[in-house]
Image (tube, rainbow, N blue to C red; front, side):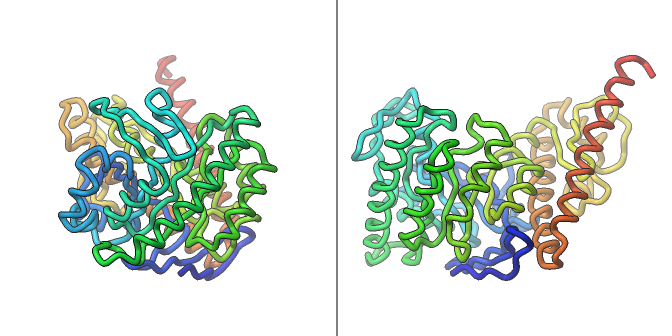
Length: 390
């Protein structure tokens, strides 16, 4: 059950009560595609960096180690030792990302495994069965994610098929939730709005899936080739046609700037691989912009990544030490930076929630965006000075 606590313009402060705990929104979901955060970050670590929801991928866990094996071991929560909410992506994004390895038909999608080439079939029923075996808190409907700049006729046909698939997903999950051996009999279902950058298709699809009275609604198919301005426009055009009394999830987005802009447009849930991916390469987020820990300027810097940050990394380790670890190719370097970045994103969401509660989200957003912009300008000047010797 979703409860809307307060609004500030279109920005929403809410909470979603689930079988595995209450999610305070807006929320950033930490991405553990295969049941783990890349960068040697454990479930125990997630508890210490303000993580509310962990996100895993249906397709990847089906391929390895296998959803039936995970069910035999008690489900994904027990398998990865995480007792808070888990959202499982449906495998639909792999319809987009594995375009060279799949064939789409009305019944579903035929894949060749990216690991060993074996043939895999996944349709709406199979996706729901896999997610039921995993026992996740929230299951995502199986959909097709067309390219953002795809031809209109292709998008129309794709969205119509996604709607038919959603009806099949709902029917199948309702059946699975009644079975005696189902791990999570209260598994929730989020539907996905598609339509590329065609605002009229987006609006009509939003109306159609809203009538199905699902537990939540996602906006998919963005951040896959369109500009930020196009993405923001589509969100503005779509969100008003989704139920305000249900959570709204923007899939695969994004940077701190993206999150602030999209919260303002009514988004509750976010996920993105960027904080972990960037952390593994030494790029860390701060309120004064993104820093590169491999930079020579940090060789003798004994200050933390961010003096304002209360994450486990910043409480203990210096920039100089972290830079040394990267140069020495020690795995600890990646781990410390990923922990910092995830904490930064989770803490950012906490500050956003507080600002909405206090009725000053617009001022908070302006302050953060101006800080990020100023930091980028300063970094450009510093780089130019280093290159010219000043």
